[in-house]
Image 1 (cartoon, rainbow, N blue to C red):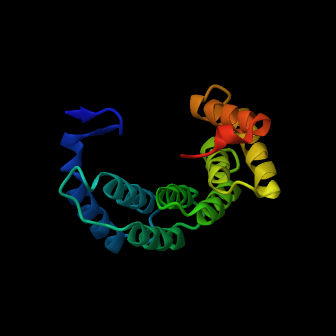
Image 2: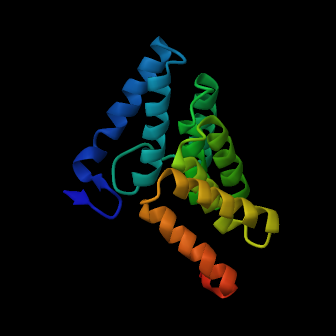
Image 3: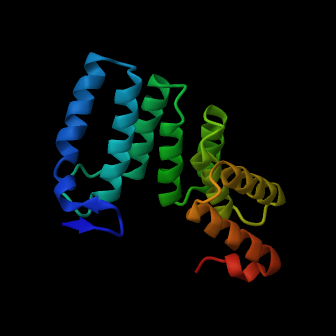
Length: 173
């Protein structure tokens, strides 16, 4: 039984608790292991996103962000926890933090289009700042250069370009 709107199957939801527990155990046995850290980060963000649909630990965005900070320290060269923190910050309507997290991800993984897309997405929250607007456009350009057929990038680019022509187009309701 899949909820295609969120790319999550109900059969998968029951696996989150055991996954989190195993990853915590593995992290205690092999502290700082990059694979474990990245998967732990992903599991926490997934738990946050699906907690209304499944029996998973009730986590606040701040708790997940705190876990991601720990994971960043354990795996300082990985862009994954930074990208996930940007995603959680977006869900928590923290545009400044989202932008800071995405910028760091782009520094760590400059060839990762998702990092540049995250910078551009943060620009949607931080309207009115000309410097952020320029950074948003540049980030979209870089993301498009790295992944020219990505429809999410193309959609955001269309919104940004339309907003430049008619600012009311980009306003959120």
